[in-house]
Image (cartoon, rainbow, N blue to C red):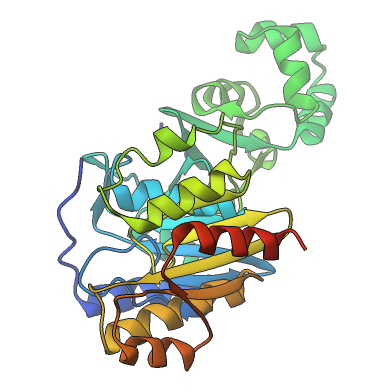
Length: 338
């Protein structure tokens, strides 16, 4: 029987054992880990793993609780949009409310599920409900609904009246033009009983998303949280002024994601905050992002940084020493447009 039930967050205290317990059902669900993200080291990061599900790359994030206003969430959303890749967030609470079992919460390219839901999927249980903008929905097979209506002897108008919707809405259901609210699905189940179960389609927690087009914020709005003197934002603004997409991140090893046409450049910026092992980890993680998403990795080293940092970065990949922002942007723009 199908059952239809209708600013900053404190740093998670989950242990390594918690993460391992979540990783196991992910692997059992067909996830293949491509890279474990280790940077930032002591601060929260937006991505824990880069993975594959079937033929699709996916970003994974594991938290106990998270808010949609949290920088970690916002940057995960921004990254998934920029890379045109889905993300799956596993959390117990979202915006201070419990994440319901066997429900997929959809926020743009981010899908959110509870640990219990993930465990159920790993055991082979199907999920039928998704939440979007505060409403609960099911996906249906329009062709099967049409055949069921005809088989049971209902005209389009008769069935629409019986379940309390317009004939136009019913026609859209049958033509797969829109999903059905959980409340409406209850009404169809009252009319057709268990026969309606065959109409409802299961949900893929890794793939099913709702992506709406959003107006792109101006560079001034996107970078208004920048700290004075932050060279990453100065670089991004200069690139944006030249018509080159540049997104700044604070919770990833990649500081700036640059895109022009089909070219992606993943920049990690090394200044006096980093040395030794942290430089190596940051550069390696950034290179893994670039390699996975068919981009170019560049480690940009502040001119005031010591030689050791430059040597470490050079042992991993391409390095540019930043002495003049204008010269760097001009040279990079020229390279991108060749």
